[in-house]
Length: 180
Image (cartoon, rainbow, N blue to C red):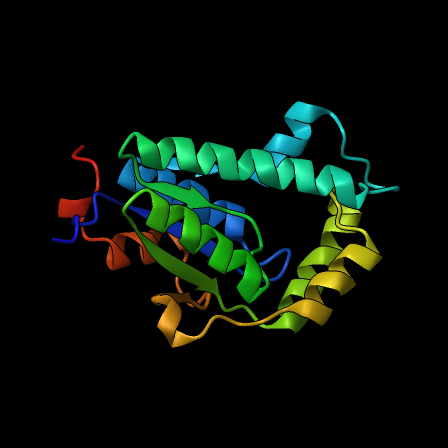
């Protein structure tokens, strides 16, 4: 007999500057779930540099820590959201494997914001510095290697037509969220 799903791993997918972190924080608050952020992990590790970026080895260490945190939450029967870009099928498959190991359901939330809008936000951020920058070569790497999720990945689509809080409340009705 197959063990039923105990919890869910929500995997965000999208270009930089499409609002993944904002949406993840809304989901964290509304659903009362744990959030794992590679940006926060890099901040904790004190290794990010807007000008020089990070080596492949440092990125691997950051991702390994993110995977460890996700697995820990799932092993404690806690829902979790990974707010990384998860721009390749391979990355999303890795997260699905972690979910499966912990008898969790895996769902992708595709932040389906046009590339032109992501670029506009990215360039605007360079003027206002609302968040850390993404280097030109890192942005290009995501764009060049981006593989949109396919329907077999259990995809929810967020296109930005609703504010993030409204979309979260509409997509995840109150009975699934925390009571006020």
